[in-house]
Structure formats: C-alpha cells, structure tokens
Image (cartoon, rainbow over all chains, first blue to last red; front, side):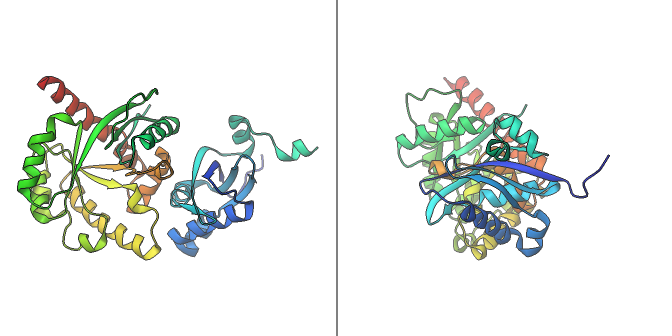
Length: 115
Length: 217
C-alpha cells in the first residue's frame, strides 16, 4: 500500500466579514499571519496551502502538515481584518483527507461539479 | 465530552450581548459570563453574571466587594496597582485576578511571588484574555507574550489556577474553543491544559459560586 511521506491536515474555514475578499487576498492573509507569528521557519513547517475558496459562501479549505494544525489555527485566530475591513476566520471542521472533510461537511467536489 | 466555558464577554450594548451569546452557542460554548446582562435570550447556553472591578485603592476594592459580591456569579479584579493586586490576592470574595494588557502599566504591575503566595492553595484564578494575543503588531505581541509568560511561570510554580477567556467586546472577537486552545500555544501551554483552562477550571469556579450564592439566598 502506498504511504504518503508527509501527512496532512485539512481545515474547513468560513470568513465573517462585510467585505467580499477574493481567493488571493485570503491566501495572503493566511500566509502572512503564519509568517507574523512563527517566521519563515514556522511557515515552512506549517506549509499552509489554500486548496479552495468559494467567494459566494465565503468558505474554503486550507491544508497544513499533520502535526502543525494547532499553529495554523492560532495564526488564523489572529486575523482581525481582511482588505481593511474587520473580519474573522473561524475553523468549522478538520480532517485528514479532503474527501472525508467534504463528506462530513456536505461540500461538493468542484471538479465533479464541473464534469 | 468537554463543556467549554468563556468567562469574559464585555459587550458595549445589550443588543450585542444577544448576538454574542447566540454565536457562542453556535461555536460550541455551553456557558458564558458577560459583564452586561440581556433579557429574552432563547438559546441552550447558560449565562453567568460577571463584574470587572477596576480600582486603584484597596479601600475602594473592599467597598465594591461588600456591595457587589452577592449580586454576581463571577467577580474579577483588574489589578491596576500593586496595592489592589495584594488585596485581591488575599480576598476570598475575588474569583479572578487580571493584570493590565498595556505593557507600560505591566512594567510596574505583574503577578509577583508575594501575591502568588497569597493566592496559592485558594480557588482564585489568574486570567489570560485571548484578545490580548490578537490584533497587535508583532513587536507589541512579543512584549505581551513575554509579560504573560512571566506571570504564568509564577502561577505554575505556586499551583495557581489559570483560565483562558476571549475578552470579546463584539462578535468578531469571539473565537471557537479550538482556536482559543491554539492561541495558548503562543504561551507554551500544552493543549490538554489549555483545554482545561476553558472548561474544567472555569466550570469549577462557577459551580462553587452558584452553590455559595444559593446558600445565601
């Protein structure tokens, strides 16, 4: 059975803000907050990656390494503004695979939807 | 299953209380303590009353405690001066000791060994507000983290209870329980103990005070 070298953790988040930030802005905020708290080495350990973000529902999935999800949660909790307007990002659910995260939270796979 | 409790909501208006309590319920808190009370809230969450005392003289603190102790579930004292900190540390009517978040005030005022000896073996707790750890510039945050860690080292050495609250003044400042425990990692607090700081420790304070208040009635 093939085993992945790096275990990941996938977090489903929802943005609460009067502004309507786009995917790039969300990614920059996630990356910058992690860098602000833990520096370049921390950022490389957490290795955050925005998998998807829906601008209509303001919900998305972010990935990090398995044993650093606490650091990513802390980084996300420190975000208080996005695009200049007050905002908060709250983690709603987490899982070890995107598939199970989507299943548990009732999200559709965007690729399947496109097909 | 853990029952999460946030002992520090400080909304500015009763309207905000309703919004904040509904959100806290949604995020998984079972109890909250708020400095402003609101009526007609229909949710599954238990709401406790909290008074934050901010005085500069011990005499003022004693007067305020005499007047208010029976009316609130939780009484917290923000120790603005050493004199107040010492009085709060030895007074059984105080539930929570809180130190100022402003680094300049903190330079002269922190949880020292004398206060810790007075609190040791009692049920009073030292409070960390999560709002102090967010919304700050990196340099300010570094100072705040160092100051809180200095207090925590003294508290741990003297076996003093530590609680973690949001200190939220509006709905955007409320964080989910897992985010609060994650923020505790900035203070080098283990995840299990951080979870106790927002569940079993505040629960014990509320339980004890409710028994006392019911007994007095």
